[in-house]
Each structure stands twice: as C-alpha cells, then as structure tokens.
Image (cartoon, rainbow, N blue to C red; front, side, top):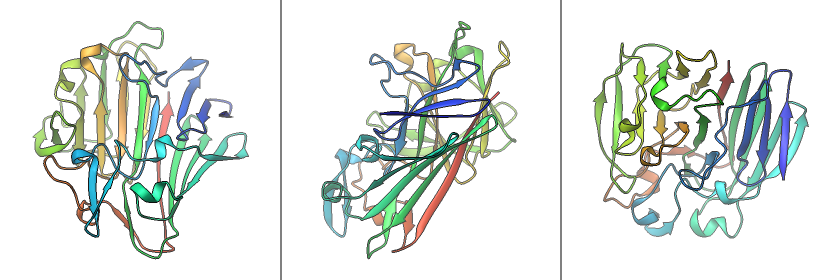
Length: 288
C-alpha cells in the first residue's frame, strides 16, 4: 500500500514495503528518482541493521556465524503504518522468528516521516526489547532526479557543503567493501563538482564533512538540501556506466564491512544499544 503525507509545499508517498519513499513532489515536480531496472531499481532504500555489504555476506556474533544481505533486512519487510496527521506518518516493524535467524536481536524499529514547511524530516527510532546489548547501523539511500524535465545531466550539478572542512574518502573494492581511506580534495574544501567518472570505483564515502549538503546547478533555481546532524558518514553514488538520471546522497551512522574480513558485529564500530533503551536519529530533505 502507498501512503501519502502532504502540506502546502510538499507531497510525499511512502510504501509499506521497506517504508520506502516513492515520491517527493513540490509544485507537481518530482524530485525523487523513480527507479529503473537498467541502472538502479530502487528509490529510497531504508538501511538497517547494516550499511552496505559484508564479506561473503556474513558476520560473527558470540562466535556464531550469521548472514545478511546488502543494507540489511528492513528494506525487505512490510511495515505497519500509523497515519498521525495529514503531514506525518509512522512505520514500524518488530523482530520475529525469521529476523532472529539472520540478526539475533529483538527490536522495534520505527521510521517517522513528517513534513514541516519545505522540509521532510525522517526519524529512525530503534528500541532494544532484548535482554542483551544490540549492535546496528542505519541510514538513508534516497536517489534524486537530475533532469526534472530540464534536460540537465550530472555534469551540470555540484554538491556544496555547509562549510569548508578536510574530508576523508573511504576506498571501496569491487565487492563493495572498505579497503582504506584517503584525504579527498574538495574545491574550496566545500564544493564537489559532479561528473560520472568520479564514481568509476563505486561510491564516494565521506567522513569529516559538514553535516549538511546542497545538490545545486547554475542552470536551475531548484535545489535539494540534505541535513544529517547525527550521521558520521555520507555516501554519494550513481551507476556511471549506465548513464543514469539520478544521484544518491546517503547519510549513514557507520561504514560497510572491511574487505577480506568477516566482521565481529560487536567490534565493527556500529551503534550499541543496551536493553530497554532507545536510539533516535533524525535527518532531513529540504526542497527549494
């Protein structure tokens, strides 16, 4: 089922499956990528409880081996929806016998979408209902349309961070796993001029960057602003060999697994949450 929230500025559609956004419109213009099987079929994957891929799709917990697919399990689950207001909706899943086979923690996971003026706030809430500490990562994976009927390409765009800073970029193997990091040079330490070739080696994964970034072009007044005050990493990605009409801007709490290592989930640098505690993280998408 597709649910809609709206206000005087924005209209957003969300599916029960994965609580994934299906549309973000302002003035009847679509800003969210609409999916394409040739390049990237998804639109705005919600990531939980791991980021990216694992070595051989596996990890350890208490010396027992488990398997999880790319970006975890929430993306494949049907969420229960609770419409709270015309501009606000909450989605919820609870661990069950199937999730415990691949992720041995009992949890409640909520995604709350709320429209405030020209912004969409996306809040993830995790409640540990287990009797042991749980470990997880979470984040967003929205794709944004580049042309929007204006015949623009990725070369017409740039990313502008809120302030100048030295950033690190985590290097990715051809298996989508972390191999190391290097300092990445931004123009004026805050501008990334976009072109397809910068994604030839997969995503850029930044750390140390400002906690807000605009997707802009000098050829249009329209822009998208992503703010992620409590996310440590930012993934930037597209599939350049397929000349897609989208760019993904992905705020994450953690990194994908390291290449060549089957990670111990307790030592992977994930969020740790003690029994009966909750974790809340909000990021936002603003449309100008």
